[in-house]
Amino acid sequence: MDQQGLIKKRCIVCNKLLPLEKFYKNKGNKDKRQNLCKDCDKEQSANYYKKNSNKIIKRHWRWIENNREKHNQIAYRSSKKRKQEKKDEYKI
Ligand SMILES: [Zn+2]
Image (cartoon, rainbow, N blue to C red; front, top):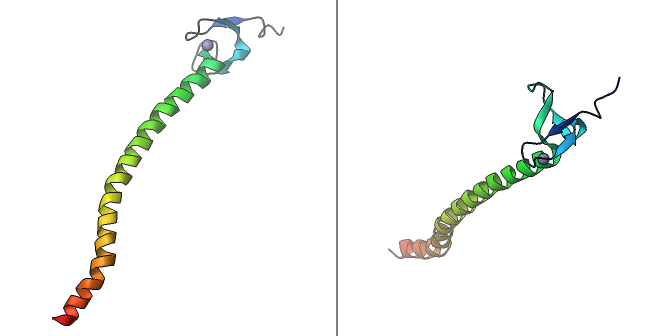
């Protein structure tokens, strides 16, 4: 009665006819399998992650660069000028 291995399904992404084992389970679908095969699912999720992580990294680096400039200026002023300012304050 085990005919699951014989039943094949066409992947909507790579268009290959593959056994159901090659598809992840999806209770929402009629045949309880996803419409794209495991390999394509992995590739798509990897691409999705890459795109997202690139966006996140780019934003993150912009944020860091912008803040680092301010931060460095503030740190530079506060570390170098504070000493002089204190000296000047004492002089005045
Ligand atoms: Zn596929």
